[in-house]
Length: 263
Image (tube, rainbow, N blue to C red; front, side):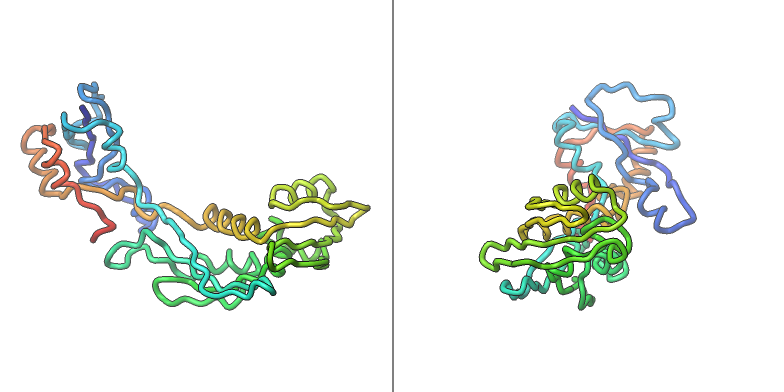
């Protein structure tokens, strides 16, 4: 019920990072199609082979054509809720058994700094940092603007450690009113009052943390390798010898598929 197109030769790029993230190697699955699909002339030897499996569906096979992507997770290891200070660890949950694709300090340090995080350090397999709500809500990352201190000053009016809600007055210069109002709302804040260039708003700590995680995810998580699963070169050569097409049972297919995360 499904046919999988695999690369029969390597694609290469002189840049090792681009080569790993974007080039399909011999044995990498490219696309899955329904049984009986009419493949184009280019989708054959010498560039490709076809593996047919009538015991699996296209939907079941989609997981085998996934890329090997970053997936960061966060753990709060200590906190002072009264002051809104948290010690946080972030690691990459898609590092493989041998340690490939573990998080690195270089990968996230600039973004953590942009969000006002301090005490940034690396101890494999995680990066640890201090996340102070008051620093974060005044950061370039939160406002989405470089050097926000040149455009705004901030006063913390109150912070309730029980509810996690803080009220802040931002005095903003040389930023259009509609842009400031949009940012406050988009960041999860609630406008309390607005007079001239002063904006008073409230925001809850979990909204700040979720926004931070979403931004780090968007800006730093990437594809580590174009494919997570593959079949061996020897298995590809066997199919090439058979004319470029082979039919396998579900068990045979699963036995041949290798997962880079388990290596």
